[in-house]
Amino acid sequence: MLKKIVIIFAAILATAYLVFVLFFLDIMPAETKCRGVEIVISDNDMQALNIESIERQLKQKGLDPKGKEMEKVSTEKIEKMLLESSIVKDCQCYKTHKNLIGIRISCKRPIIHVYDQAGGEYYLDSDGAVIRSVQNAIYLPVASGDIRDEETQKSLVNIALFLQENRFWREQVEQIHVTPKQEIILVPRIGNHLVELGKADNLEKKLSKLKEFYTEGLNKVGWNKYNRINIEFDKQVICTKKD
Image (cartoon, rainbow, N blue to C red; front, side, top):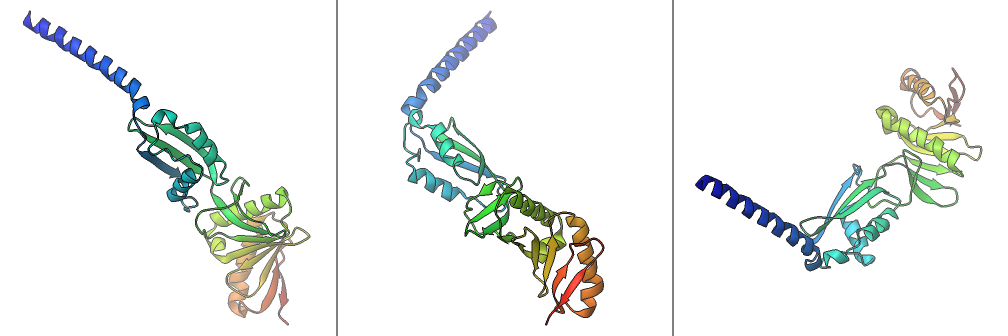
């Protein structure tokens, strides 16, 4: 009998506690203030975005939640503001039980730094999306010249992706230049020559041929003998000697 009474009493206490907790949590948001923000940035291997810059943006836009009543903090406004940044791919903002505002950001990943003929400067990600600025200096291949439309940007993205996947060429190619005829010229780090690629097609085949020429040719005659090396045509490497 005593055991049954204890069990019933414990059940009543548990129920009372649950009711109290649910009631307490229900009224908490209206009576508590935000302690700050908790920011996590993913897909940010190159440090293209930093937490300090996000905190600064919140203050500049009057959206810093710290010290505000939790119920008055608009997570939707914070999300909308952060998504206006061209580096942000996705953003989720929410309230936590610790009276913090959680912010989870996924970044676009810049793969090439573009300086176009009109004086524009921006980055492109692997999907060809334009990123207007990044928070920190990032070492990436530079593209310059007559970059006039999305088709040209797509060609540059394809080249940049190829460079990323090939260590030798990633370390060798410093700049990609687009001519008025929309042909590609590569500027290598080693040697005082330019590589005339033609159109941005058959990259693996063309650059494999060039690498073989480097190994069998330039390693023997010297890397400064030619000022231009054309690999546009199939099974040919056309060199122009320096004057």
